[in-house]
Structure formats: C-alpha cells, structure tokens
Image (tube, rainbow, N blue to C red; front, top):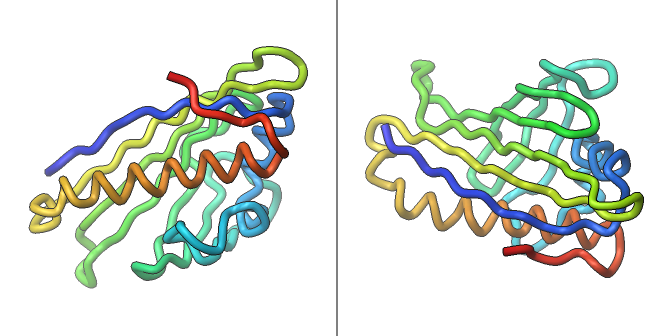
Length: 158
C-alpha cells in the first residue's frame, strides 16, 4: 500500500459557519468548483436529507464515477470526506480522505486547514508519485475555488 499525505492552508474571506456550510453542501460544490482545471465534473448527493455523518455522494470525475461518504462531521470545525475506487471484484484500488479543519480568525475570516490523505493498493502503488501530483493539484484547485467563491481576499498561508 502506498500513502500520500499533505496539508494545505488557505485564508477564506468568510465566517466559519458560512465556510463549513459551503464545504458540507455536496451538490453546492457544482456551483463554485471551476469548469476547467479540476477533475471533478459534477457531484451528486445519493442519500436523502441534509449533509451529516454518513451522507453518501457520487463524484463524476474525468477518471470515472467515484462514490464516497461524509466520514466526520462536527460543525463548524471539522468535515472529513471519504471516497474510494474499487475493482470489479470489490478490492480497493484507491481511497482518500479530504479533511477540512476550520479555525475562525475573526467574524469575517476563516483559516482552512486541509489535510489530504490517499492510499493506493495493488498495482496502483506504482502510480503513487504520479497520483501525488494529481492530488496536490486537485486539492489546491478546490481550496482556491472555495476561497474565490466568497470573493476577493482568499489566499495561501505558509
């Protein structure tokens, strides 16, 4: 098994409750994620109700459909998604945990600590270095789009 882990931090020009709500709104990602530069084409919530622990979704990506669920949900500070890709026999090829830890710096600014973790299995371990570059690009695009969705003022930290 190969493991990819890294952390990105962004300042988002919005209050912590608004940032958490935007990240937790699964289908809302379709409104603020860019049409170009991301592998995500569309995301759809597949379980009923408001997003919560265990809520399921399906990402339509340039690599194919990727199911997932909300693995941790503690408003307004912690949100962790878990997605996976399996073989036809049900064995994991890849799985990931995009995690968001939010910290209010004041009423109108939130620091987003984004911890990305991915595991590769079987022959996909050979692609781990390549997949790390893809993951870094995708997670950066996501954070930049999140910050931009609230208007000017979002930027990288550290």
